[in-house]
Length: 298
Ligand SMILES: Cc1cc2nc3c(=O)[nH]c(=O)nc-3n(C[C@H](O)[C@H](O)[C@H](O)COP(=O)(O)OP(=O)(O)OC[C@H]3O[C@@H](n4cnc5c(N)ncnc54)[C@H](O)[C@@H]3O)c2cc1C
Image 1 (cartoon, rainbow, N blue to C red):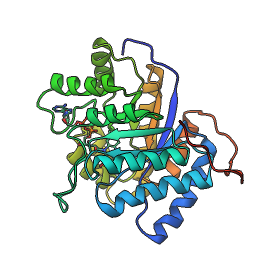
Image 2: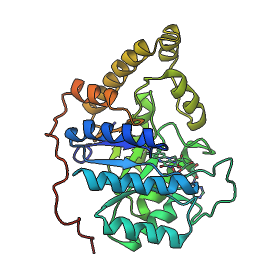
Image 3: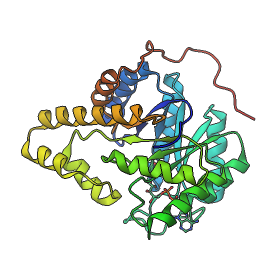
Image 4: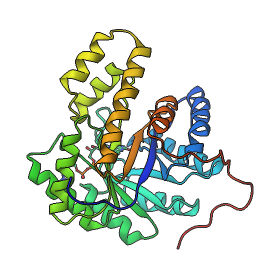
């Protein structure tokens, strides 16, 4: 990786819990992770109706109960332009200052959802014009599963930056070389925003292997074989996953990566342990003080 990147950011990603029990567990996970004082915590967006509501409820609950900066994800698929405007307005009212702008995917069981825009670059341009938000976007060091070829995929990423993205978060990957090459390629195209690597600790191998097929993340043979050799040993897989993720993040940071975005899968232990292994600072737990709600940004 050739060029120095701007200051470091360490963020965490959650998904909206779907059941009452899940919500209870999730509250505890957030309280355990809050003392890490990440740059922000992001909340994924599901295009279907109930999951869309879940994203807002989860984000607003974190705003209400902690001092964490909350960054909701928004996608073109699953909303009309008017709904996106309403979501942005609501988020602005509760003090949200950053969103992750995505195209999203059409869910198999809901093929006819509204689509505010065709591609994420259009959503970025819309949010930029709306005003009041910093914008993160997604990028793919191993290229998007639908990409026809690497250069076209990079062209499409550059469109999002030119439309006004402030930061990019990568899809998770296990080959750091893919990240270094991607960063070099986009720096050569004049992109100077931080490209924060997404880290997915492989603590449940079957789950990650299944998802990796869908999202195009390559699992190196040596990792696959070591994981498979552990068989049905969840503790062994967790330990190996944490060790591998620690080493991966250490190397990325030593090579100048501007931070790490942790895909937490709503679990606290892997993130807490990797954070500590990396020697990253922690703050004291800071529940949100009682008082006026955060002011909207104008
Ligand atoms: C950090 C991160 C967070 C995510 N969070 C969520 C989430 O919360 N909810 C969710 O549903 N999904 C999420 N995803 C998955 C994401 O929605 C999918 O990968 C989706 O298929 C692409 O979204 P995108 O924003 O990258 O799309 P885009 O940047 O629009 O790209 C999608 C595809 O279209 C091509 N393309 C882009 N622009 C153009 C153009 N103008 N003309 C022609 N082709 C173009 C690209 O090369 C790519 O192949 C996330 C992914 C990442 C990496």
